[in-house]
Amino acid sequence: MESKNPVFSRTRRQAGAWSGPAPSPDMLQNMYDSPSYAPPSRPAFRTMTLDDVVVRGFLTLGTLVLAAAAAWVLNVPPMFAIVGAVVALVLGLIASFTQSTNPALILGYAFFEGIFLGKISQLFEGAISGIVLQAVLGTAFAFGAVLTVHALRIVRVTPKLVKFVVAAAIAALGLVLVNLLVGIFNGVGLGLRTDSPIGWVFSIVMILLGCFFLLLDFDSIEQGVRQGAPEKFAWQCAFGLTLSLVWIYLEVLRFISYFSDGD
View (tube, rainbow, N blue to C red):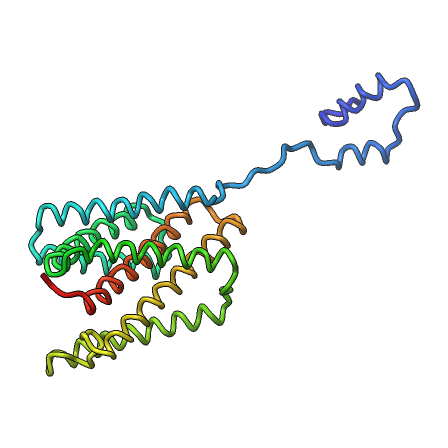
C-alpha cells in the first residue's frame, strides 16, 4: 500500500531517481526527523545606535530651547512659569520612575520645562546683563569636560559610584527642602541659597552632582548601544541628558549671580 505521508512519498521519488542502492530505513528516519530549512532569525526590534540618541537628544533639547525662547519673547507671566515648572516636575518624575520611552511624555516635559527656564532666564538677564550667555557657555563647558572624562576613562562608572551619586542627590534635595521650610520662618533658611560662603559651596556641590549625573547618562548610553537595547530606549537617554543639563544650567546661573553686579 502506498503511504499517504508526503515525506515518504517524496523520499520514494528521490529513491526512484537514485541510481545507487536504496536508502536504508535508518537513513529514511533521519531524513524524516531532520528539521526543515528556516532562514536565520532576525531580532524583533531594531537596536539603539548612538545616532538614535543624538537625534532624539536634539529633538528634546530643541523643544526645550524653542519653548524657552517663546516664553522669553512673549514675556509670559510668572504664574505661567510656575505652572510650567510644576507640570514639568510631574512629567519628569513619571518619566524617571517608570523609565518611560514615550516620546509625547518626554517632549511634553521638555516643553513645560522650557517655559520655566525661559522666564527665569529672562528675570536673571534683566537683573544681570549677559548672565544667561555665561550660564549657557558654562553648561556647554561642563558637558564637554564630562564627555572628555568619560571618553578617557578618567572616572569609571561602577555600581558603588552610582549608589553614591544617587544618595548624594537625595541628601542635597532633602537639604533644599529643609532650607525652604526653614526659610518660611526666618526668611533665609539654612543659608544654602544665599550669597554667602555656605551658599557658594552648596552651589558648587550641586553643579558637581549634575556633572556626575551627566557621567552616568553617558555610561548608560554606551551600555545601551553595546548591549543592543531597543531603539526606543534612546528617548530615555535623551531625557536623562536633558534633565542633567537643565540641572547644571540652573546651578551655574545661580552661582554666577553671586559674583555678578546687577545693572
